[in-house]
Each structure stands twice: as C-alpha cells, then as structure tokens.
Amino acid sequence: MAQYHLDYLEQLESEAIHILREVAGQFEKPALLFSGGKDSITLVHLALKAFRPGKFPFPLVHIDTGHNFAEALKFRDDLVEKIGERLIVRKVEDTIKQKNLTETKGKFASRNALQTYTLLDTIEEFGFDACIGGARRDEEKARAKERVFSVRDEFGQWDPKLQRPELWNIYNGKIHKGENVRAFPISNWTELDIWNYIKKENIELPSIYFLMKEK
Image 1 (cartoon, rainbow, N blue to C red):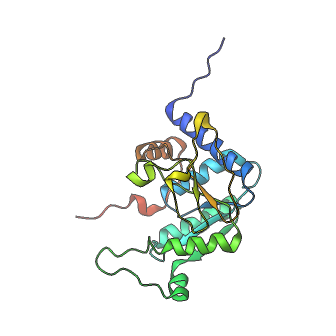
Image 2 (image 1 turned 120 degrees about the horizontal axis):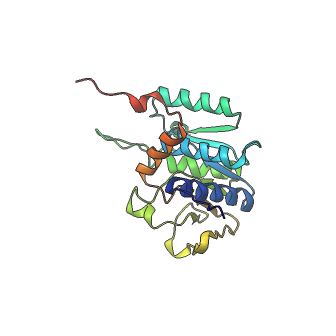
Image 3 (image 1 turned 90 degrees about the vertical axis):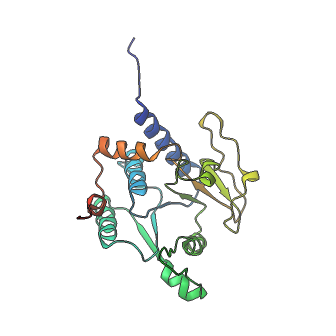
C-alpha cells in the first residue's frame, strides 16, 4: 500500500490552503490584505492554489502608507494584472488629512500605527467581515498569542479573552454584527519557512529584495 507523505513545507502549504478555504466558506465579505511584501505575495500564491481555476472569493486590499518603494508598487500592479483579480487601494495620506492625524517625527518615523485608521475605515466602507493577513507568530510576542481566526470587536480591538479554541484545525468564524475576524493562514510559518517556500515554488518578488548596498 502506497504511503502518502508531506514534507514540512507541504504540510504548511496544506494548512494555509485549508484556512483560506475556511475563510471563503464561513464569511460573506472577506478580503486579503496585500502589501506587496514577501508574506502577502506568498498568500496570493497560496490563494491561487486554493481557488484556481476559479476567481478569488475576495478582493486584494492594499493599505498604502505612502512609504512604499516604487518597485513594490509596480510589482503589485503587474501581479494583479497578471492574475486578473480585483485590487482595492486606500491611502494613509488621505486618512491623515481627513482625520487631521499627527505623524510621528524623527529618524525612524513610521505610519504603521496610522494605517490602522485607514484599515478600519476600509472595513466599514466595504463591509468586510474578515481580513486575511500575513502575520506570523514568530514575528513578535503579541502575534504569538493570536489565534488563526482572531476576533476583533466593533472598534477593531483584539481581546485575548474573546479568542476561541482551535482544536484539530477547526475554526469558528461566528461573529456578532460589527465584529470582524483577522485570519492568518501562515501564522505557524517562520521567516525561514517563507524564504524556503519562495525558493521551492519559484515565487517572483519585487527586484528591490535582491539589491545589495555597494561598499
């Protein structure tokens, strides 16, 4: 009798595809958050495996901080055109002006905190009830505590007491009106897993990933 064996990357891939299909099956208006980075590009590759030859059951959503490299934006647009999927772009710059928000100053100034406002406005605008993200547990302690289906309240806040058990890869996407879920198909991957998978699958990345600083 032939044995069916998956290596560790194939196991991670299988789990991620299962999660993507669970999101599509359990939610009415999901979206895939796409930044043009290696993790979200990997998510798109997994979604192609999960749903082709059909169309994605969700749009790609880019919350543009305005601090992206031109190469990444061009790669984003080229990829979307190549796969023929819908892309929604909302800009943090517009949110800053509309809400009169204050940006951080200094050498390491970032709009990462401000993009939450833009994301919440986008969720409300389109009525998304689930957002698929590329967060991984190995990135930081806070993300290590989140479930694969991470429930957010009507204010977009995460409460660890409201998280559901996820035994035997069973995910509970039931939510109340106003709540939404962040789903993390590659939550159990490490950064090394991502790079190994990119190499194995020959996934194209923006050229800027491979630029080396001259001495």
